Image (cartoon, rainbow, N blue to C red):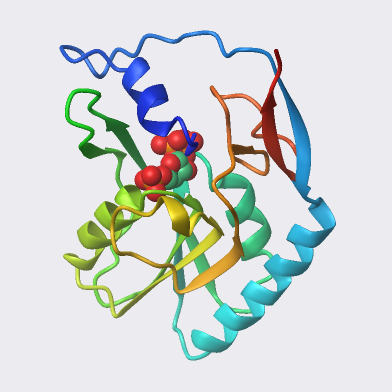
Length: 203
Ligand code: PRP
C-alpha cells in the first residue's frame, strides 16, 4: 500500500508495543479511476521482458525473485514473456513507519526458498515509493554474493524517494498518486484489478 498517506496508514496499523499484531481500520469510501490500462501494461511488460532477456541472454538460469505480495501479478506476466531459463522464488518484506520519528523499518517475513550465491538474480517489485523496501531487500540479497543482481519495477514514484535507489528497468514513472490494481492494494483490496487505477476519495 505505497500511498501518499503511507506513513500514516502503516503507523495506524501498527501498535508501538506489538507491531506483529496490526489493528485494521476500515477504509473510507473511494472510487478507482483507470490510470494505466491492462493493454498498455501488457505492451510495456513485453518491452521490459525483451530488454531483460537481452541483458541475461547468457544466463544458466535466472532466479526471478518476486516481492510479496504486490508483485504477484506483475511477476506472473513478466516471466511468461522472458525467453530464458527461469526459476521463480519469493520474498516477503514488511515495512512500516514509526509515527513518532517517521523512520522506516523493513522486516523479512518470508525469505527465499533457494540459494542465490553465484547466480543471476532479477528482483521484481510492483512499486518503488520511498525506496526503503527495495533498498533493504537488495542490500540483503547482495550479501549472498549473486553473480548479477538487477531490479525490475513496474511503477516508480520518484517524487516520493527517500533512499537513493533506482530499478534497472522501470515500467512507468507515475506522479504521487494513490494507486491500486495489478497486484497493488488499498487496505488489501483491489489487487485483482487488471489495470492500474487512481484512488479518489469520496465525500
Ligand atoms: C508496498 C509495495 C512495495 C513497497 C514500496 O508493499 O509492494 O514493496 O510498499 O514502498 P517503499 O518504496 O516506500 O518501501 P507493502 O508493504 O504495502 O506490501 P504488499 O506488497 O504486500 O502490498
